[in-house]
Length: 559
Ligand code: ZN
Image 1 (cartoon, protein in one colour):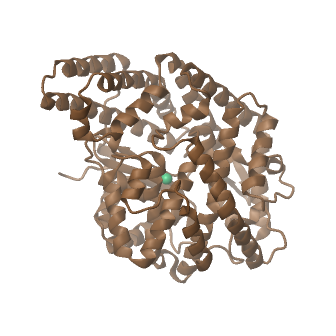
Image 2 (tube, protein in one colour):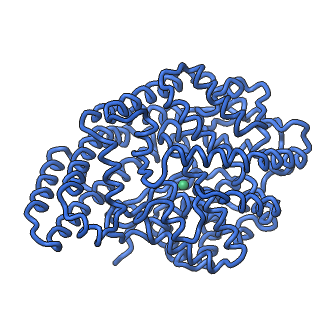
Image 3 (cartoon, helix red, strand yellow):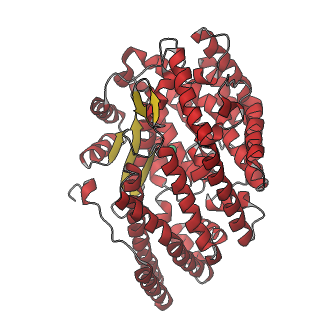
């Protein structure tokens, strides 16, 4: 097949009439099917449709993120948000039919059991009665994206967005770090009312949806939406406690080490992003140079990564440069009817570029490896498993960091490991905060700020904010996009990091063995739940006792 490039990717714009007609045909075909072969054919025809719809959705969403100021893209995204609940309703209805009226054994023989667990979670997450709420939820999410993308921060004679100004957090000049933090957090202070208002509406709306679906609270619904089919909030609470007991003490030591290295008495929040007095190791070239180095790296790594990356470059399947109006963050999306992923990021010249890049390429590689999975539900696993692919690639690329950092590579590896460990307490803090918020949905804005302060005391006890008022008051969470856009999507990073650290250890011992296990794991996509995928790749589940102890022990030695 000829190589497809990004500008050739299209998908028909669906409307509710055509979708209803299509679904009527799927049901009719399913009802008429007499044999196993006919039943599978019916499922595959529906699945093709799902892939096409998902391609259209991904394109619409991507274009909006690429230019949040473009009215046409914005309208298309609004339209997508409008019709999404209707499409969900039709899909859930089809899943209900397949769950209740199918020879389960016959289909399990073909697809395994995971898809049924996923569909059951979908049924628990949706009823037509919440359709308007879902539209409203999307609107609020778009408001947060637009509001934060609109920030124009004047600093050092230039105008920066929230992404662009981040690079100053790593500036060797302490005053620059402080002043750029101040500009950032003053913006948040000024927008606090709007940010509070969006979140308050989100919490109330999400809670109301949970009640309509007979869930105890939005935590329960949030877990269903995240398809957490093989662990529950009790497991997550025990994991957070393990991080608090085993990782927080190490994190306190690492922060002390960092202060010593920087030669400061007090490590303030604006110092936390820098680990060396002369600045963190930074990539030695620009965007185009990095792509060249990356090609060399992936060619050396084997496992099919080299050819895969060539396809990403030649297909124009990446948008990595920061620009005004472009949404913040980095993500990987995919056009599943083409079997092609797409990587979005905002390079800013720091080592984070390399990290975001290897991270998102990890997602993309997995999406590509599993593109021929039997069902669209299996193209991607649930998020905590997805993040294993991305975070592990960050570690598996370690031996090649000389290509980006030259003599700074060893220092990069140390800082990367340090930050990976320091991330665990922050990640569980974000998760714990959201549990508190949704367990007390009527809390006031001040009470929510108080909740954030409480989790900071538990997991980030070293944090000092000086005179940055918004942070002192407990407002740091407002910068954390997931809290607004993807509720409960955060513990996933910490669970995956716990797995990725195991890949790090294995690669230190036998890089070929680790790479092989990694590539096989990617190909499995989402055909199994989290713990089964992890164990299948020879990893200890983060919920098993002693999982953290081993990596913390090794990391302590190394650092
Ligand atoms: Zn990721």
